[in-house]
Length: 344
Image 1 (spheres, rainbow, N blue to C red):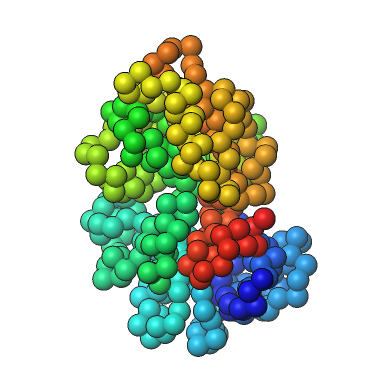
Image 2 (image 1 turned 180 degrees about the horizontal axis):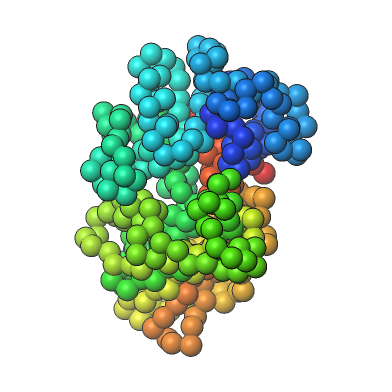
């Protein structure tokens, strides 16, 4: 095992994703957590916020207290619009420093599209093209050429691990895709009760942003890179009364009389060397129970009662494979560590 030690700082360490980052990184043999940053909780211990964290770590500090010369990688788990400002300030001053951003700040390549979807101007537009949007399974070598890694969103991760390989091989009708995704409420962050202020929150299911969810911008960007022209899909997100986990149900129409078995074999082949993606046996029932608290994605291909319709189920933990775990997976690829290090 490599003895290289990488010094880490985490900005936004006390949010749901930040805490999972801290917890997982304490298990990584090549990582030293040098700084834990929080603008509102300076001086407090991180295990005040998460009792799972047993390791003795530095107390929380404000960003201005960080000596960036002693940091190799900065994870940013900040509200949209904040990461771009910090990276803009640090990028040229500290050329050794690498960034893994878990917000949407570098997911959208067109600054006008970013403003359209996120309602703010991009303040580091000269750095957008220097960033790589990285679902780990698709960028195992290219990622090493970049200092800014844009970590994908949770819904798009569960969706693209299924759709992109099938669209690339032209196995499904690109004009008839329906995506129905259900997520635990942690995906909305600690302010979820303000965002979803309705009765019986913990006992009901809630469909939201049906016409225009922000992750659609990210999905659009990824699909555009496939160079297949316009791809038509419907995306319907829902919040369910559980803390974490995502189950995406993706309804597709196979082309050229390709069977569910053919779709299944293609996904199995594509993900054969991806240690965190498991394609289950054909027509296997699937829930989130196996993937909770892991960096895994489970996929099941199922034939529906209609021979020309197939439903593909994809399950992940939104806070891990959909955020913190994939960020560490991306870090491993970026730094040349084994992809699974600290995550298996």
